Image 1: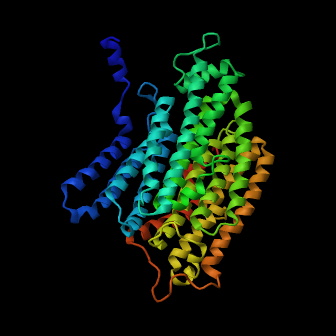
Image 2 (image 1 turned 90 degrees about the vertical axis):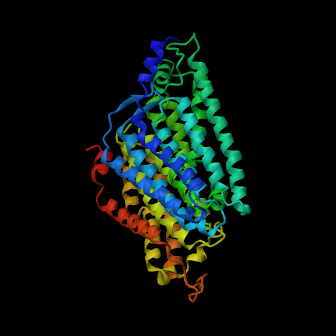
Length: 499
């Protein structure tokens, strides 16, 4: 390789194009440096540096939201408006996780700075993941996210449930990574076959692989590779039949980590699936659509039916998240026929973020020393004792159930309209049945909060915690955003509906 070729490659690496990811990485290193340099008494203030730094990055990102679209780093990444939108999504997720951690970590004798450091690295990796247009880049970013989550899930080292959750996530996560890698290898190998049309030595690049698949629409090995790749990514989404880890891991993980898994990890997997389905695997729609359709229907039914009998709220919210993955898959299935169905996915993700963090925020405030032990009975009488927390919880649960005029209703409406226009009437019927089932357990939780005859778990004399200023402000903003987005969808809603 001569100097001119190296210079040409280096010229395709505009580092400023990924300044948000670099900034998060530098902020993560700054936290570790402050822990070394500052006296131990000042360490408790370092998490505030993480939140403030992320807020500054978010403001700069919003101020420069329009982006020059196109491939960078010689095709490894693709800058786009959707990628910019997901940068905002993951940054907001990371900020909210940091706020929740500020309530949870002081209740346990665990390192605080390292938690925020790892969360920042995960956020940066998620940003790169959803902009990847090369399987090597995708796999490296995905494993960076996954390894970080392995650590955070088992972060409460003195909790048997947290350690058990970490072990289960490690074993099953490794299995999903193996499936994904095996699928990538099959696609790479078959695309280099000289006996096939449009063979390529650069099959790791999404655009080249799409050309190969278009020229060879019925190849068995390519079909097997596609199915394995979809299976590997479906694990991250929590879609059936790869959802078996969710109840135990969600219950045992610290509540802020459960929120990160439920929102951040799920959203990253969904966007990767969307990219693969619409940009790479579209020549194999006759295979991909039936597979995702079956997965969507079974995911909606399993998630809602399994959640009906749950009393532990972390398990309940985990299984309800499985059903939400099914609703999102319904939009993905429709994306091949309805051009704005992809926009419905992004809107649904934002509505899900707002509602989920409202619920997890209240759970974080009320959680005791045993973070995994959160039962429905723990919320009895909350409406009388803590009206603000009860109102935020009801707002979040109502949005997750799809009750108007909250944001979750509009998210489901966009998805259902896309499915109807795509002609997926059977799936639409399953989804409507799923909504009806979900109302039972969501409103059962709300009934416990406001109308339960059971005595409160926390005696009135002792009182329930109200949370710090940061988390109360975050909860108020989340509840207001859910109502506001339900009434007015703004530019995001216009983009979703194709106007």
